[in-house]
View (cartoon, helix red, strand yellow):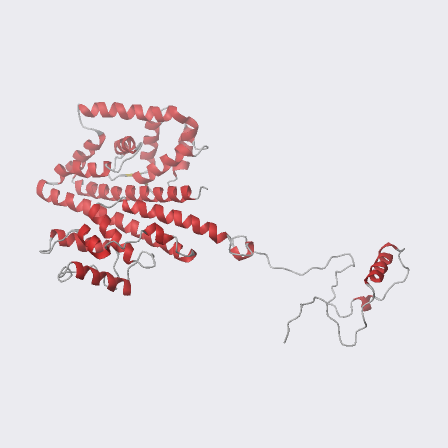
Length: 411
């Protein structure tokens, strides 16, 4: 059966033949421009076959009702999925940045293991599971026979995460009688057939790219926690040998290694006003700190500082302080930005004076260690240092991820 053109006009079998088009148009013109007729048609005949409205006065324009559409609903905004091409381009750029942030946390051996993990993560969703995990274990056993006899990187759920792979390798290099090089393992497992992760990202569809961003961002967080665990484990060993008071400078150095920009001078000031000695500032302590930061602050300035810092969630942690400080220096309508370089120079000048004084005596940070030791709260202060280390590293990681998202969005 042949398929003809579809017409929007229909007629019944007994309908009369259409009149000449010119005559129809001429008749319409006469109707539009002729004088109004005195004939009044019966209203019921006008409404015959239609729904009536008690309030309809003959002047209302009747139109079909439509439900209000959600502007955040893609289907309501777009008629096609062409916009996904732009989003895929953005997701690829973001995925590459996350992979590079993750790799920056790794040493050479760990980078080799990361390359192995990515290669066996067939769909690049950040998980090696099912057949992927079986193939990885088989490859390891072929390259390093017996390496899986004492332990395995497989988790209880049968999957292999990057962290479980790193833990397994670390155990082999430090505790197992069977040791091998991660780079040797990389060469043996992948050989010359390794396909770069960036190239593989090009072949992922929209949904797979989103899974990749989520999966490898999760790995980035897990890796950060693993690194913190290892760093603190080393200090705990030193503490057991030398005592806590002797090890406190090591805890401080571990935290100070994370400092960037103005963090060091802010931490000295933070500790100076931390009378409770728990690395958490109550509102009264925050006010004292602000007066030291801005010696010219008026009562109204202090109220505005407190409002910007926002203590609604409880005492101020050091990570929250640097979060506020970083934002306040970049947001034009913040009080810190309004006071500008003069305020920053004043704070740095005060920090420099404290550093010079510390050459001839203890700094505010060191004094707090002695006070805590005398009060029997040094262990609590040590725990506060560990908590602050984790919070600062988490803040920096989220800041770097947000920056990556913003920069990848630039065309």
